[in-house]
Image 1 (cartoon, rainbow, N blue to C red):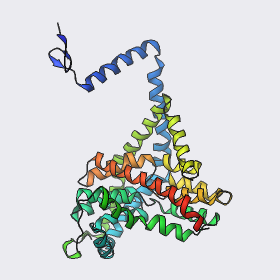
Image 2 (image 1 turned 180 degrees about the horizontal axis):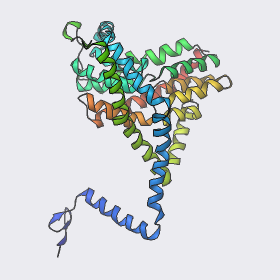
Image 3 (image 1 turned 180 degrees about the vertical axis):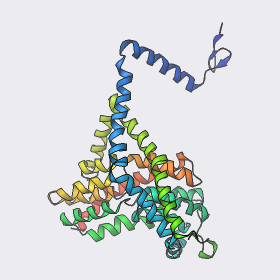
Image 4 (image 1 turned 90 degrees about the horizontal axis):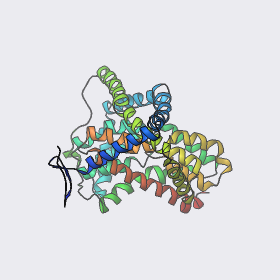
Length: 364
């Protein structure tokens, strides 16, 4: 018979002490057996809720919608820009700026690729650039936190400009403060506070980043890379996040979380409807909705929603795609990449509220 005894450190079964995860697993076994007896449809209902929540996003948005194709094209465009010397040109521009900031110039590169293309392409292309440039792990974290301060879709930017104009706000000022300002402010702030292991690098100490691969292999290789990124990293990450949301919704936990998000947005003078869409679903969709109603809204709500949407949201990117992509191509693990993304996202929410409340009255 198995020996069961209680020691000061915990329960021992069969001569081996139970670990915390084993105790949790035993609890799940008991709960599962109880559900099978008392409420047999609960487990199937939980599974169906996860599938129902993830299915429309994975299939309708990424597989049959234009988002999946846009990701492949964004990687393709990024690789073309890289092959044409775009990264080396950026280094020439940013070296004087980052010398003053005290960070590696490669820190700002992901944000620029993000503004021009897509946050997934920014990680896939700019992540290895950071490693090649000799950026420290702290600088790689700063790069992620800075990257999520800018919009990941050009359509988000254009829809946002239409909304700002309709609300009677000086759009150019908002763009300068909210889109380009963080490229300088965020690295400096984080270097002085949290991640201090940074060092500026002169152009002589940086390698060249323009690949010498021929044009056609670059094009076809980039298309294949974009497809691999979509099917092997992004879709699995999306599936995890939305399946989890479905599970939380099934057990009645998600609605209070969603209500809390709405209350937070209202307190920060961010339009709660489009702000929630940006955080949970798509910033581009949020701006497409905002441009149609902006003329009738308080300008503060319009500005706050635009600044929030010009970011690395939704949650699926912050908690899924960024950790998956950056842990593959940098020195960071998934926890470190996610931590930097969460910090950057929190900073973006607070920035949106501050600009909406304090700066908007000066721009009308």
